[in-house]
Image (cartoon, rainbow, N blue to C red):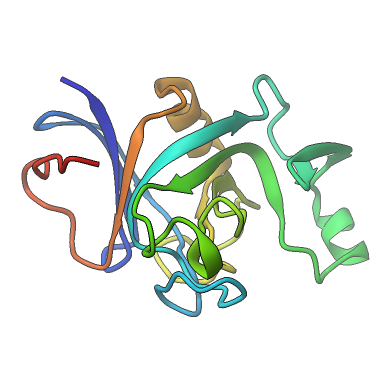
Length: 173
């Protein structure tokens, strides 16, 4: 079997599956603006993706990333007070790339060029509620567990529907 990441915008959940087996199951936060693919929309893109790149191997918990680079900062409430407007990307990044031309790949709908990630965020941020700027936010311990369980190239399905009881049939993508 092959591992696959399923993300439900409806359920605000992410599962790592291998066939019909659920290996990991986490509460997440997708976009406050809902689902959508247009560049600049701050929406979570739907459809089939792959993990294009894994970033942050062995980074400390709460390490701050800007432009996919560690800043040398470690997130804290004091740092948040100094820069309250920041969109915190912490600990690990799984950078997604769309697989569906015209849907989430190429032109104004390109997930990779939109810099859509699955990433860690401050642990006090609510999960289970849409509140991101388009990315999929996770607790830091959860993103580490997911990061350590997959390889680049793993398929990711982001759907507005609830998580299926069994794994979806793979398309020809």
